[in-house]
Each structure stands twice: as structure tokens, then as C-alpha cells.
Image (cartoon, rainbow, N blue to C red; front, top):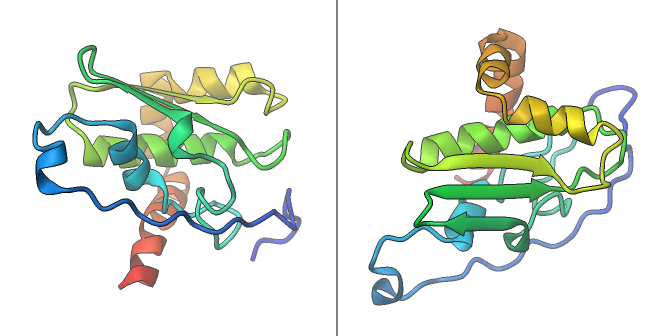
Length: 157
């Protein structure tokens, strides 16, 4: 664990049961909020060994998909208003969505209004292509993002 955690004692919630879908109920291959949530729910928090779902950082209700416009919108809520890892969480969400969904989707990622002291700056950074690309070129930051994305897969094997 990291010394000097911003939120040393987060509230941990139980994971929701995964929804099994009938083959024909989702046969049109349209992407919906549940598809997006299922792809990002197990991302590990950068500071804790819990998923974003377990920390209530995001939920299915915080995701909107407009298939016709090709748009995915995610709003997430950091566990504390001064969370220094909010941009890392947003980067993790963006990378995971880039890996899981076709590139024609426009992805908007924002912190929940009023949930972070630097809300405007975090939102601007997470939705600026050049800033995101530059952040992902940083080897230390990229390693942290990869650890958050892939550590949950190691535990589920």
C-alpha cells in the first residue's frame, strides 16, 4: 500500500451480480449502458485493492449510451472531493473503452458535478485527446493504468 493515502478508509460496497442476457434479447449488437458497465466495473482503484464498482465510483446508472450518435458518456464520483487519482481513474476508463468498443464511439468522461474540487480541470484533461495521449506516453503513468486495468483479471483467473 502507498503511504499517505488520500482516503485511507474508503467505504466498500458489495459487487452487484452480473446480469446474464438471453442470446436473442441483445442480438442486434447494439451497445448499451450495461455493456459499458460490464467492461469497466472491475477496474481497480489506483490506491486500493477494490474495484471502482465496490467503491461506488461508478455504476450502471452513471453511464449513458447513444448508439445512433455513437456516443458513450461516463460520469464517475471520486471517493473524496480532493482525490488526486481522479485523472488516473478517468484515464483507466478511457483506455478500457478504447480496448473494448469500436473507434467510431465518441467517449466523454467526467466527474460527477460537485464531486471534486478541481472538477473543471479534471474534466478538461480527461476529454482532451492531446492531453490523454501525452499522459499515456508517460511510462510510469501508463504502468499505473495497466496495473489498474489488468490486476482484476489476474484475481479472477
